[in-house]
Image (tube, rainbow, N blue to C red; front, side, top):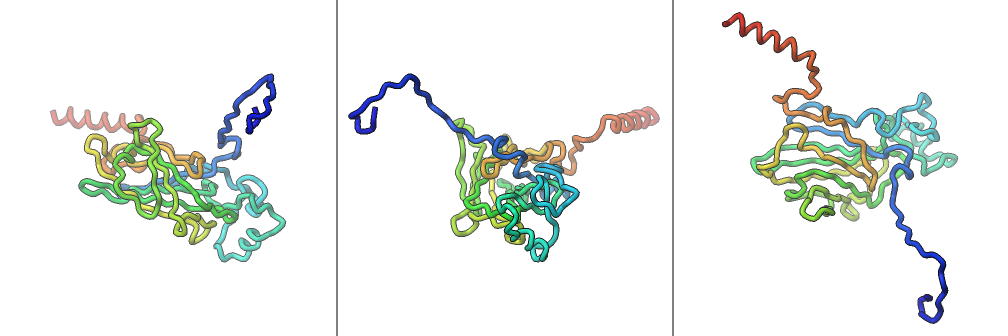
Length: 260
């Protein structure tokens, strides 16, 4: 039936098409990664090595996947590569790092109060060729249902399951930090989140304070393995091998037998 309702056409078949975004089809490799740190542990957990690719032997090549450049933003060589009209301006040109991701999201557990705890989020752009305008970040953590204050970012809860509110969308404030600049001194945006402690669930043990998943512009970011998370100083390392525990148990048993 036409829109004006004056003409009809018989159809042998009709169908509906639903389009969805696939990160695996859009990108050959991940585009972001997550690093972690905390006030109670000096360990800074970096993005996993080769999260988005590995460095090539020829670091001057910008066409091959995993290529990168080193040096200061003021380097004449870097400026010549970035502004070279013969190169595809859409091809990523990232700073040489162990993870080789265009974007890194850092989650830092900053401080613990009596009834609250604070997190600092920093999004860093390592791509010399791309500004991210109207960027967005999605993070999943069980304490988002008790988020009280967020600084410098816009926030909206995402609760597709109704009563469960563990996912948040964050994005920049217009004309302030909604544009994530290219790699360099200004290529980052930051915010702090203040959560209320829920006595029945809150803990710093076993990496509970860190996010479960992080997405940047809809793409799933590579997370460090759980056994690498910063643990409390008095907590046993989850990577302690059983072979190292046996001599300790034997020594303790021997000492007990001698004293007896």
